Image (cartoon, rainbow, N blue to C red; front, side, top):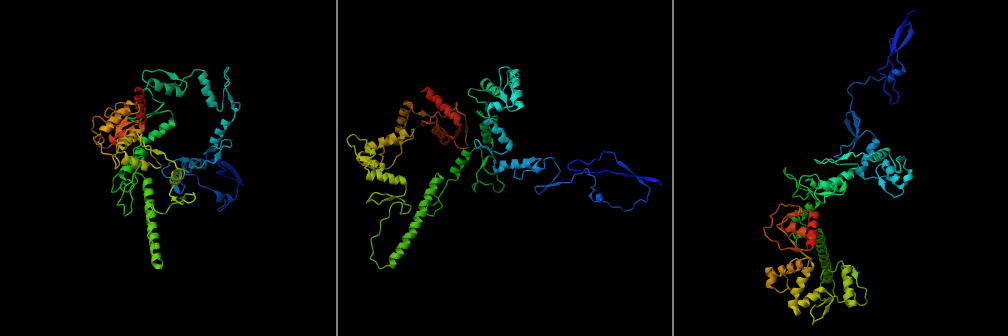
Length: 494
């Protein structure tokens, strides 16, 4: 009986092992018999055709994407991160959700990854638990990783891998922070900090890298945008952007100030949202009181009682008076705790904090407005002096004219302010605005008309007031650190 030879291609795939496509075929010798025409075995149903060169796409996150190693992509908008494992993707998504499930049992600090928690837990262990010991004589330092030990041993060997990149400087250092300190002290202006901003035209520097990264965001011209309907992009126009939050708030206050929409106010404008909300509460109280008055009037018409005299309306209305005086026989109520305390001190305890400054008078008052009324009627000449003394305490703003102030020609012409400014500067408490000589200040001009005055007579005592004056009067946005440094230098020269 003749024998026949059949070649069987082995194709066995177990687990994650690849198919043995490159191995030699197995040869099976069989006895001669009629060649089967249609023989099916159980293994035929498991047969898979060899993989072709073109790999079909894979369905990931509801999308068909080409086969790639980083196939697990983040589904958050504007995030292009991708990972090779689902666990890595879950760890990344915690940066979007803020979930920090790994909490230290000792200090309750939380972390995104378990490896971060393990690294932090080492800080609570003693130095003797560190596995890597320096074998240098009289050293004995220990480290958690072999990389840190290698860096430390190179320091023993005198290796200095950090070299200065300045032209003509050959200094080298063993640590990076030493190189930064050298660059600041030798190759930078005095006062420069280790982390310098590399933006064109910016001379700011910081002590930490985190502060530098926070500052660099201010150079993004499209960082903040105004969401007011008048500023939104319409008909292809570009939206309005601002580099800093303070610039956006200044734009909102100047271009879109809060205004009252009540019919009786005719679009009254307020400087702050807090003032607008307090004003709107008055409208709500007045409308509610008007409804209560109408209900009371209807009830009086329906009743047959004798008509009583109309009750005098109280200033501020009747609603919201939740603070009541508990003194027997008083029964007054107020809208705030502060008003109740003031009433108790003045009415029931006889407190008089406001004293007439005239030597021959000596009258005392419980409220400031009563003292001002007394000065305007009994001592009209001293009322203007009291107003100027108040302005001196506020830092040199000119005295305001009101109904209780006599119209002095010096006040009207500004001579009074100039005399006060000279006395304030002579007392070493005030400083004068140096405009237009601003060589020692770091600033930028805003998009507004600058003051053309040759000599500015503004006097101030705080760097904050000086910075606001430059922006509001001269259209100059000065750096905060530059203004504070200039004020300190002027204080030292006085």
